[in-house]
Length: 403
Image (cartoon, rainbow, N blue to C red; front, side, top):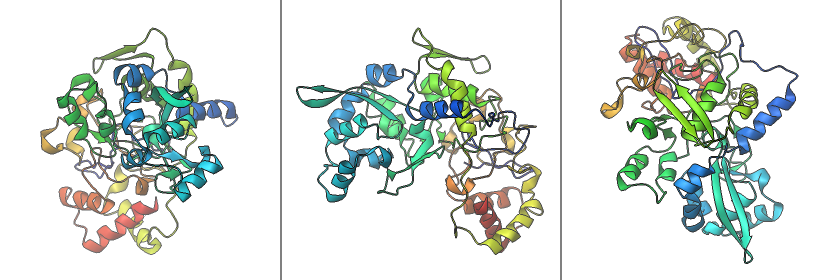
């Protein structure tokens, strides 16, 4: 989710790269407001804002899940399972094979247990059989994953981590309510990518699912700096993307969406913001980088590579003081003639992305056009004519992995 800017090395996040910036902490929650954080955690994980109206009544996803989405399929398209929500007998059944992971009915059971991360299913028992009657999604669908401690795709929740395995387009394309042309677009996105404007303006140019950790202190929380607080972006996503009941209006882009006749979003925003601000960027795993090389890379970062010109402060961003024109972005021009993502935003610019936790969320640039940190550094070196040799580039990569 990195993007660089032309004269100065800058990393830009996709859509809402929510990573922290050491600054004035204007968004910091009161240390004592544990209750608000707890309410936000509950909302982040389980609140649908009434979006069942979209996912059930319009897209009819409950029909698809009940008939075609077995756990093996669900895991293959990036859905995650919370191992802590599984009773011991279910855990044992998965291990010994007595739980059928090829049966959609098992998926219904997992939804009944509240074990599918980011998906809320309403299950009723009819004639002795569980039936999925309604389904909705939560923030955690895209902005949480699991640690794979039980099995791949099954483990303890990691809230705030972007689910780069998730294939939102492929999931949406399962809907029987869509046309063949719509399904083709959704299926073109691939894992970890989503286009928040496609359903509004019919322009196709997906960006990466962003992290929702390390937000504390960042005033411009999106890749394009559209909103000055997390509540702004949570309202936007909750209403215009999830389909929650409420309203979002942005005169700068002409987006004006109202769902339902009630407001199920606004009251949850303070808690959601408090919880997201409480999520730190993850530290790099032990042994995941070369400490000596990282030390050399740090000197380059602050010197010859010129990264610190824009990646300033303890959280490595100047986002609290300025935005940058699209001509500065290493993610521009967009691939395959896609319209500039900045051109579809309120600010028409990009921010410098914070770098803490950058090791965790490959690929990089807002559109995922750099697969690795090595590719990011190489792109900067070439386009900015930094003159770094191969060993210097390698040292810089090790430093980025250490953040």
